[in-house]
Length: 241
Image (cartoon, rainbow, N blue to C red):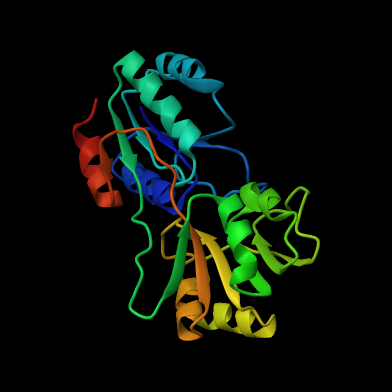
């Protein structure tokens, strides 16, 4: 039994590949999205109750290996996985998509967290496209900048006082992102360094329009063996446990 942590594109792709190879897989989703895209194989939804709860789950289900394919900003579950797997002697691998890389002509400003992005925002524009997800929106609750907010599910308050909300999920296209930016007269884009092709089009659209982009850096993570591709994770799983 292999446990995959995460509802990311990479996690779903890995689950499909392992199931196709006949590997028993359970994917664990955090449950933050109302209607998640479900992977192949068995699925569980919700937290484990910290590293002790996860360790107990590994024992009870006789898990032989774990792949942490959670979102690059989901540091808490990664820390729990590292502790639980060490305690139980279960092999652990981190599957993490590469971050975004600036191209010549990009106007990116890197900050450490959403609060720093909110402080910097007024110096870059008056109409912002916020694509940081629901979890960091409270940081922008005091900004006077008008914000176009895009999330998968409705966010909880507090929200920026001047905003419009769009509920949508990727993948997005360059043409679609460009049209959205133009229609709302966006002059600055705010994003996390999530990486991945599903949401990269907004950066290309900003590049075409020479718009500034505020990018929130990935938080520090607990050290563990890490690969960047699904195939590398498949190869690892073939020899783990």
